[in-house]
Structures are given as C-alpha cells and as structure tokens.
Image (cartoon, rainbow, N blue to C red; front, side, top):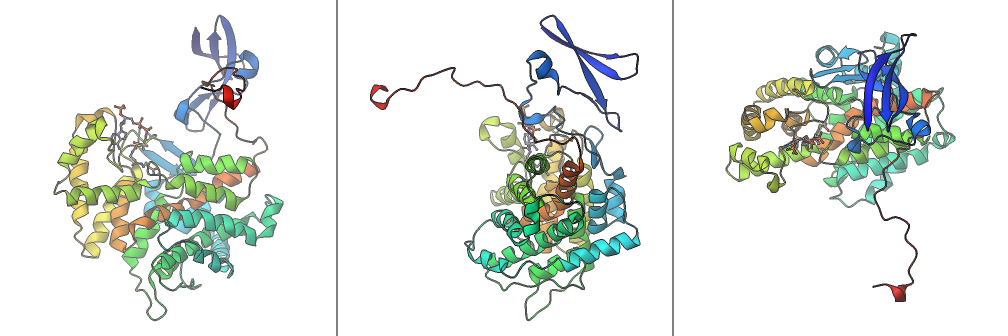
Length: 440
Ligand code: ACO
C-alpha cells in the first residue's frame, strides 16, 4: 500500500510523507515562484528501492527552470515573467529572444550589440552551400534543417572544445541568425531557385522574407503587415517550457554536446505531427475537409469516433486545458492580415466553423480541448505565401531562443547532470541463448 501526505516540518521546510508497505519516507517539497509544488523524489530509489512511473512525463518535472511560466488551467504564458500578450503587442522577436536567453529586456546598447552579432553572423560558410546539393529537391525542409544545423558545427572547431561562457554570445547569435539563412536556402533549392544572400541592412524577419522571396533580378516587396505578422509568429513560438523538443534539447545538452548538435536534435523532435508538425497537418486537414465538400461538421463527427483514427489537428494541448493564449493572439492577427492583404481564404472559414462546432461539442468540452497555436498560424503563413512544408521550419526558427536559453541553463547550472530516466522493465525474465538448430 502507498500513501502520500503533505506535512510541514518545524523548520518550515515542507516535506511529503510517502508510505510504502508500512515504511514511511520523507520527501522534500519544492515550490516554484508561482507556487507550483513538486515532491522531490530524487533520493527515493536509494532509500526505498522504488522509482516513480509516469509514462509520457505528464506529471514529472524534469528540471527547475527560470525561463518560461505556463499556467495551463488559466491559459497563462509568460517569458521571464512577462505576459505573452504584452510582448506580442510591444516587443519584437529579436528583443524577446534576448529576454528569453539573457533573462532581462535589453537596454539600447545590449540590443545594438545583439543585432550586430546577428548581422555579422548571418552568412553560412560558403562551403556549406555544397551540402545543399546532396539533398533531393523534394526533401522535407525539416530534414534539411536538422542536418544542416548539425553540419554547421563542423565549420566551428571551437564548438568541439565544449561550452565556453565567454564565447556563448557569438555561438548563440550565430545559430539564431544562420538557422534563418539555412531555412531560406533549403527552400530556394527545393524550388530550383537561385540562392539569395542575406542583406545586412534588413532586420531579422524582413531579411528572412527577402532570402525566401527575392530574386536576383527582382527584390521582394516587403509589406509591413506581412513582416509584422511573421515576426509575431516567431515571437509567439519563442519558448514554451518543457515541451517535447525543448526537453530533447536539454537531454542532448545534458550529455555536454554542443549547442548546434542539441538544436539539431530539437528540430527532429519538433518535426512530428503531434508537436510542431501540427501546423502543416492543420492546413492539410482543412484542405481535405474542403475537397470533400464538408464545412467541418462532418469531420467533427469523424474525429469523435476513435475508430477513424483522426484527430482535430491544432486542437488540444498537454498543458493548456483552456484556450492557448497564443492562439487568441494569432487568430486576431490572422483576421487583420487577411483583411489588409484583401485575401478571402476559404480555409479560414472552415477553421472558424470547426472551432465553433468543437467549442460547443461535449466531446471537446469534457476533454478541455481548445485551439492551440497551430490552429491559425498556418493560415497566416499561407497568406504570406510560405509553402506548407516550410511551416514547421518557421516554428523551429521561432523556437531557437527557447532552446538556446534552456541549453544555457543546463550549462550554467552547477547541479546539472546527465539526463538518464529509469524504466520499469516488462520484457522476458532470464532467458538463455538457444543454438539455431534447437529453435522452433
Ligand atoms: N482531436 C480529437 N481528440 C483529441 C484531440 C484532438 N486534437 N486531442 C486529444 N484528444 C482526445 C484523446 O483522444 C483523448 O480522449 P480519451 O480520453 O477519450 O481517450 C483525450 O482527448 C486526451 O488526449 P491525449 O492524447 O491523452 O492528450 P495528450 O496530452 O497526450 O496530447 C496533444 C496532447 C498531442 C497535443 C493532442 O491533443 C493532439 O494530438 N492534438 C492534435 C495535434 C496538435 O495540434 N498538436 C500541436 C500541439 S501544440 C504544439 O506542439 C505547438
């Protein structure tokens, strides 16, 4: 029998009492700055022989972190204590990236230095261009992105010497800046178009749009509302505490791999359709619904039937059991952008029908399934002209500051050690080798 109760010790340090088979173990309670509580079980196995089991880590804190706070019940997201709504309204992606990585908003001098480092490091090594030739033109850009980020580390031998806090600023700026160049180059290659080099006079997001859409003979016309919308998408994706890809980056970093290797692994984790790949999956779902002549209501019925194997992509979240605050901001910006560009996208109407139907349907209400950030971001990207295969790449560019900040947190922590979860083994018990002629 196992029982766990909370008690307060005389020194005011809270502990929990865990009773296993009549024996009581006292476990420290850890409290975060927003009063979230955790039972520290790190010594439990040594004391009792027991581990805890939490498949999918739904109830496991893997670290203490001071970067991002989420309250999924209330629909709150804050970077370094600052509400996402305020940052979305008043900040830019690059300023927010600095905030996430360094823990405070930059003053003018700091921002100037940070922007300068990004500009200085915006070009990839010229030899890297030949690597793009090796990919088939129909390669998924997430495969190209992760490979190229990892390959980039070969061009910076200093990375192999391990983490160096005195050069971290340059390494971090290089990654933030070059991921955008790699993404744009891989898109141009996939379309059979000539590569467009970055322009130092452009700011981060404008420069990315230029590398994506300009031609050697014709500059892309940068519309302020388009730059603003894409910058917002980057900002809203900049961090999201211990999600699948960030936890992956921390995992890799915990083995003391370099920042580029850790970020490349983050890209791979982000690629999956249950995570960053959902923005692509949402648009494909909306296109499928439209092609079938449905306005969304029939699809909702299919999704509720578990045998269909379908999910309403862009809905639901492991942490948010309320409207994802990023989705609220994006939906509003989506309406504004489409109006400014005079675009009437039938997929937006289907998305709105789906949302309305789902929010009034007991299946979704009971399971607390609300739209997440991916539900409307794809419609903005479509309006900008970004092809659907690039959507998750855009997410990866945006998430880079969060991965970098988490990497830095691991490297700067004196307590950090290699991530190495345990398991409950359920395979065969001791089982001897059988020679091939004696097997069934
Ligand atoms: N459509 C239909 N049913 C759903 C959905 C959905 N999108 N999401 C969850 N459910 C149902 C599940 O079938 C399950 O039902 P049950 O209790 O009857 O078995 C219940 O809701 C709980 O779902 P879980 O899969 O246990 O929730 P989990 O926290 O593991 O998954 C996830 C979260 C992966 C985001 C899930 O909601 C999902 O698959 N959503 C669609 C994909 C998506 O939009 N991903 C993007 C996430 S945000 C991001 O990464 C930026």
